[in-house]
Image (tube, rainbow, N blue to C red):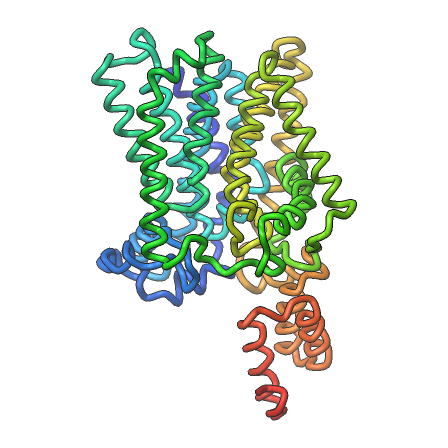
Length: 472
């Protein structure tokens, strides 16, 4: 029973820090994905839900869609229930992350890692915006699959229930893998992450990794087969492998171009995972510059990337959880990095929800090492970090209260972004300042002219001003 206290505490913190979101309205993409989507207004529509893409774009997240439909059925159109479920899911994901960490390192370090995860400010977009639920569900089930995978791989003295217990754990791991993949595409990192946690578990119990792999490789192959099968199913439903329309700057790019474009983003990944003081719901050009040339920002990103790889290799024996945490983070980011296939975003804070588990595991291990040497100082530092992160999470969550609060903040957070100019232009038109609105809209077109919705908005405004030629 005492063993459940750390995950319970971490889960409680994860819930409390987001209680201010329970009074929030539907915001931003919530309106298109949920409110304006009749398919998600009744769980009775489940046959259509499981055979249809996630949104008008080519994505497939049937389990996330089913939970949203169930939410609407229980409380038609009431945002409270949706936000409550998101916060509860974040709390459960935090508790499971703590349980996983406890299988890999000492309890104090594991609790520290889970508490850092609970209050990590980069999670706000995933938790406070209802459609971010897919990130939470994918992470929750991936962590659950990892826990069950470790149970299935433990030797008999460490595995309750013996052979039957291992088989049940293996079946549970496969089921959790399916649910993770059905929640969001980020779960395609699962096979790589399972190798990472299995290696870390071998280090934690003093076992040769090869000996452990001899027991777990059939289950790993089964999970890999499930991932490949899900990719086939997703392609069949969506109609193509990538599906989603490429983000601005990624259209008609090869792998080499995307490497050059994404290398500067490495520094942003590190900043958001380690020092997430400045947050934004938008990372489009020119707020996030896009270049196919290997300039100074790309070289800096390459230095950071090589440095992380070198750190992981050097510390693999002395601080194995730092290596494991970096590997987890890298595997999760690889899936959303646009290197494998171009996606609909260059960078989005919500997509770092899964990656942050690895970062928090590494930081928890580092803190645990300090805790063994200087307990008082370590506790004081962790308390300050947690307080600062919780405060930032709480204040950032308020941005997602309603569209009236959110859109002006988006404009302020992402200066130079074509989308920020677009939003600012529409706000100016609504305020009666058509001159400023047109200037901002045309500047948005200068940065990126490929967004059909922005063109449509501009055409509507031109029609209202009886400028028929420009509206056409």
